[in-house]
Image (cartoon, rainbow, N blue to C red):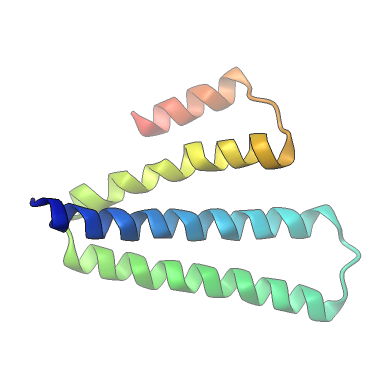
Length: 107
């Protein structure tokens, strides 16, 4: 694959990871405070559904146009990214089991 042919699926796969992280962070935020109005809940669930629908369509495009053996392994970057989000945004502790899990997934 040429450099340009690698950059497009790489960028689109990273976009799916970013969308997945945004969806996960939104759901985590919603779970921390259950005093929202019904309008706010519907709006936030709509946002999560919209993000995941967009990610689903983007994955469909990637699977149709690029080799699955190239694109799918790139999506594993989601797991270390979500670990860093937990650490830096939510002040969660890094545990050995979390690190081992991420390393196993990436390997």
